[in-house]
Amino acid sequence: MNWDFDQITQKAEEELRAVASDKDLEAFRIKYLGRKGLLADMYAALATASKEEKPALGKNINILKTRITGLIDGERDQIKKTKKASSIKELDVTLPGVSRSTGHKHLITQTIEEICDIFEKMGFSVQEGPEIESEFYNFDALNIPKDHPSRDGFDTFYVDMKNKTNAGQNMLLRSQTSPAQVRIMQKYKPPMAVLVPGKVFRPDAVDASHSFMFHQIEGLVVDKNIKFSDLKGLLEVFLKRLFSDDIKMRFRPHFFPFTEPSAEVDISWKGGKKDWLEIMGCGMVHPNVFKAAGYKDGEYTGLAFGLGVERIAMCKYGIKDIRTFYENDVRFLRQF
Image 1 (cartoon, one colour):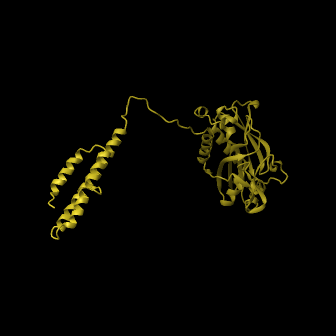
Image 2 (image 1 turned 135 degrees about the vertical axis):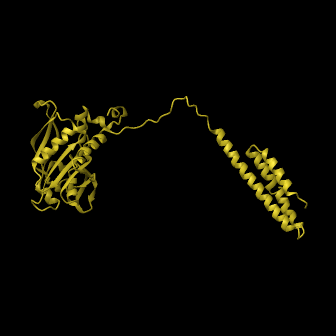
């Protein structure tokens, strides 16, 4: 058993230099490490070695095996790197770039953000309310009578579930953002100035000016000694910042169950009566709404207003058909 381990190692290294593929490497592995390879023969021959030879021979065989195994692993990694490098195509920097088509922030989202930004700069905070509401918050707490037409199934989307806190009441898709008034008053104590944007749902026939889903923004200010003049001044500042300083604003008496007195707000760019356009509703918070929120009678006063986001956007940007907002045509959206 007169093996020259240095010579065997040198020969293996020379043979490995000629390896150029996975197939060649496998043949090299079988020759040295296979079941009938050189190392297997060496381990088998140890059985016939003398006791004096076995320790040294066993040590050298193990060193040789470790060396050849390392050579094979290194060569395998090198072959993988070579394959990967050859698979990468050369980059032609003179070719035109490939760009992905990007989306565009929706005009409704832009309008909501602009309106919220104006009011936030005036001290308002932005809150949210649930889109699935109870009859209590959508109607009862807003002083809407039991026999009011808005409670009818023709004017409200009812859902197939009951109110968990009142089994006698149905749940519905909110028909306005006003229910958030009572929720917020129950959660926070005055003074407060809050804005609530969100989707609302009404079973209207879809046409150029109506949709079964649209967006509203509710505003609420509650404190001691809030007056109707505060409401008018607040909305005038808002509308001038949203549109321009050239607009004129007027209040028209109106009726909303949850405000008293109530008004609708008209604006005009030219000043003539025929150019007046209704833009939003508003009023002073009704005492019954404060009562539903758990406030003491006469302790606070408040103002509230609500506006349709689509109507604002249509007026500001000259859009004639509300359905255009929901077609999601990026060519339309990129104009704004």
